[in-house]
Image (cartoon, rainbow, N blue to C red; front, top):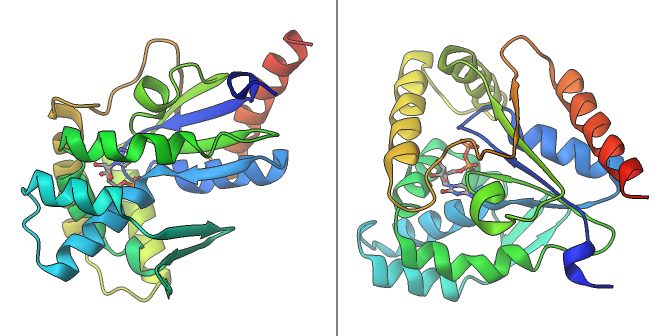
Length: 225
Ligand code: CDP
């Protein structure tokens, strides 16, 4: 099968807009593969912070990205022999990810790795540049967002559940700083691509968002039959 005929549902949006949860549920419902592209940036940040690399050192970060020994299996993420799926969700690595993600050479080094997730019967992926750079020919493109206050509340609940001691005011500040950094960078900035469908999730629950996306997908699939 021509790889370009394999369907891709690409979901972009700002921090804590619910993309990850929604994308995972959509992929499970369709039996598609799933790529959380942010985890790659988080993994590079984790490795760089551990080795003590300056997050402005583009060459060293590119090197880490090229040699990332990572295995994804369901919800598990293994770096070398270490299970890191929970660890990389910590805010320190989210903020680190947003810093390393501004380097073009590092982004380039992660491109093929991301595109390799496009496998039969299909892929659901989420990030910042899935619709614009990584899968510009995606079959369905979604831009998910919500107000910063609602996103801070969601992230607060998520981190509390994981036992991270967090403060909602600090989370809101971090979210606003990350939105700004992700939107103004020169390479692959966070913005809605023209051909994507805008969904504001401020007043929607996860199931409502998942159903909206599944409905769009089924309309597109029926058209192409
Ligand atoms: O879960 P959350 O949306 O907070 O973060 P994430 O999706 O894991 O991404 C962490 C950071 O990686 C973001 O703030 C972006 O700067 C960067 N990122 C990116 O530049 N491009 C992507 N495709 C995915 C993430």
